Length: 144
Image (cartoon, rainbow, N blue to C red; front, side, top):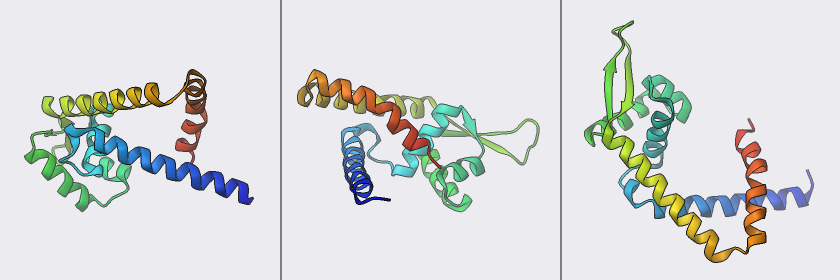
């Protein structure tokens, strides 16, 4: 790996990290939650419902840690637990209406902030570069 490759990687990491921090700051509706709590809600929003063990595996944390997160989200009335019809030992986790609304509100806040920032700081040509960068950035995110 060349120094040029490492320099690009370092610059990209720095910018992405700063952007993530800005997203967290701008999404006021989700600030009472940890990053893992927010991503857990996002997983549930996208999947409908999941087993706690599936959530833990997706978040790469222990089942015990996920249990603590789910208990907090349950206290906030953002999730519900539903027993499986097929196997009473299994409990599915899904979002409440309040959980759905929180996710939608946080996404709206982030989208509005970044749209405003792009419009205020980027030329039309730079906006086109950003559009073209989405594909390669998506490939990086999906890399294992």
